Image (cartoon, rainbow, N blue to C red):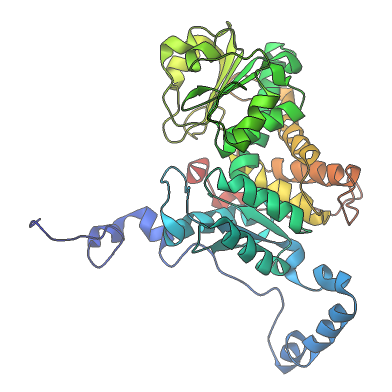
Length: 428
């Protein structure tokens, strides 16, 4: 190709070869659309769905706002919101480049949870701007799924929106990963005959996922004293002078022995390593782990520890990839969590709801546990209904449900996704 010629790899006109690329072919004109749920076959249908009939519904809602979720689609719709600052492993690629991922998230919501969703890519990375925008659009939705927003801003954004809105707000990069990780760890400990509360856990990575995993494991019963979190500068401990508010909170709730140093020092005697950093961990550091341990190397596409190396030092290994056993995939969590939260009309998603979701995921495969199958397949049709039921029950117990959800033989049949449309490789 002549020097100085600019080629766009995203233009079918400038690069005709992309027209034969199945990835680009699938994404052309997007991956989703809105379909009406009522017929507009004639004049009478039109007068009921729009004017003049719709005015009666508007007046009823104005008189009694509690009717709003019953007579609009909001009871089953979620906003998938990003600012494009931390998209997959691509980094800060902006709102337009983030849209294909948000569309993908939306179709997973529909496919696995029967949840409608709208991808929203905001052209601001200012905390105040994001909070204001989401609050302004919140009346149009039954829940808010925050996605691919970089740390530490994501923590404040979620905290503030959760406090100021009366609908569920859930940052999936944090809590979806944490829920599935907890489910996998529960089953791994069960399979190895370990007492969950006594596990000595090292978490490599103190970003969105690492922080949420730490908090979720402690909420589920792991002793904070036995948890060590590492960031790019080493072990987080109370004597470090470079900690922001989020990491200072981690220092106060973990590593009670005050251990310092790097990942090698952290792993001495550890039962569990959970990698969510993307940084490679040397094999020499793994040698200090307790025998027969557990390694979850979740960076995608390149795990912190290659599985064939991890298997030398651990009895059970998991990754974030679909081409290795035990994929820790968020799609096991978020569709069912929102299904349960929406069905119960929960005002928030509590820690107990997240733990209940993890327990439900773990229980799906509890009768057939193997070292290579500690979590269900992302395509297992039992997962989302089980998670939804558990989440709705937990919402009722925590007093955040505004609607009773029938569980058991009297419950309405769950929405059945067309799982044949997707393969496990499609989720990678």
